[in-house]
Length: 358
Image 1 (tube, one colour):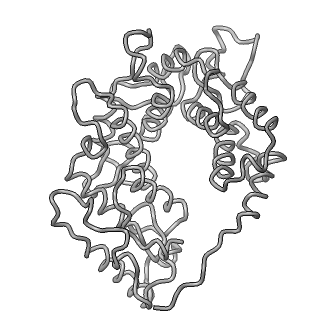
Image 2: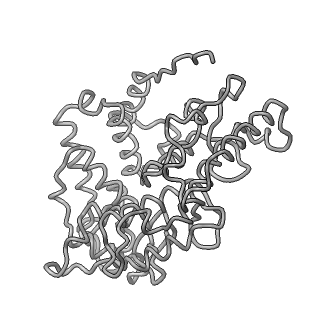
Image 3: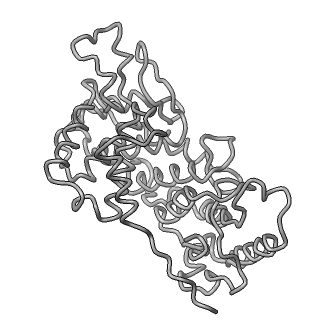
């Protein structure tokens, strides 16, 4: 087999773009998302951190200024805003406070941003934040996005917000408050029940029960379950790992669905009538996926090792084979993260052709 040409990421170009977003003006396409500035900050800071360029490309005083700005978005009643534009300051009263709510996604991104910047999180009003978080939980276990007028739960109500809530709770140590704190814990049993009920017959997770499985939803569900298992939150269950929470049969379906996301279909126009080469490539993909040993005792774990030759296609196999988010959809780069992340977070096997994905 001929060795493939080396793949090189243009780090300098990525860093230049990210610093433009961080230190100057946002690109035109993003200027309308000013209210989501905390979210944009997360993707910018985390990307620079992953590229090992955050500290080398910013000064200590700049990073402290970013930390100060994040804390300026902390809401007096708990949680964080997405930006400071809704802060009414002294003009806020009982009749208009719901126009300036803390947001569960912004709160997750704010705490993550602080962690990326090396903050000790001591400036977070933990008790207020955890009490606010509990008010966002619905009777079915899921979470809303914000509190509206008269404390009504607004928005959310799917596994994305379950992930945000679980992450906030985990990062702030909600399970360690116990009886010494007045903070009432979230209802973990109902949260677990909702997430597990969102797994479809295919194996992936949907946004809520009785919906279609999607790679993005799956990542959120798997990540939340992994955190819930890690912190051993349930007082009535001895299952303290992701594998223990979800069970062998569900893991088997999950891995099969995740590995089946790899596809050579790159455009919508390719879906109705596949070319001969694409058909051949698709058959090779199915041959590879179907070759995974499903006879192991209830789980795929250990069935395929990372050095297994089936992870590398033959010379005539496709040069490009990305990942999609749902069945019969074209590949998209974002699903490489959602799918690969789901397998990585849950400590399951990596069983797709990484070379073609790269």
